[in-house]
Length: 240
Image (cartoon, rainbow, N blue to C red; front, side, top):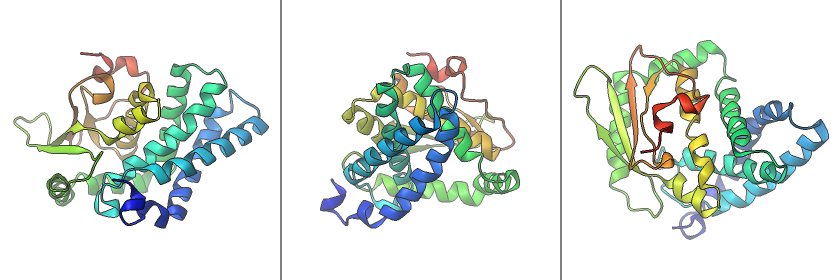
């Protein structure tokens, strides 16, 4: 279900989406420093922005602001827009993956530490967790093409306080459609950068991007989150 056939959500939010791209690419510029000259980075930024403008108009509509997963599609489009220009510069897949991961680290760590800790504490509260559970249940009642499919997982031990599984990933569809499926596993590492920056305990042992049937997100109050790089040290990186 395309945005143009629904309520033109992505067109209506064009300005906001471009601010999101610019904020994220600001970190990408710093990461690209060891690889390219300033003029080359400027050229890559222009090329990526053009690709992003095209991609966000092609994103599937999954409920817009009513679906908390929409932001993941927007982030996916930003990462996709970065990839092709870097491939043409003969960077390896691993190098591009590191650039994607470091971009997320810079993006999520750009807020002051005290603000990140406050956000993390709120996100770990029972109120937020119950709200998240309700949102997942609500999303499960929708019927959009290429949506995420998520289900709540109740803790059966003291290992985690809250969890959910993705059994269908809209990002997987998006990356496959754009010939970049092999890079999705690197984008998924951004979750480690996000929860680590917020001080939220997060563990994951498998992802759809790595060939598993689901992505198992588990959260623990007062827990720790390991760094997402090098990915070879992560349980999810071991293919089934």
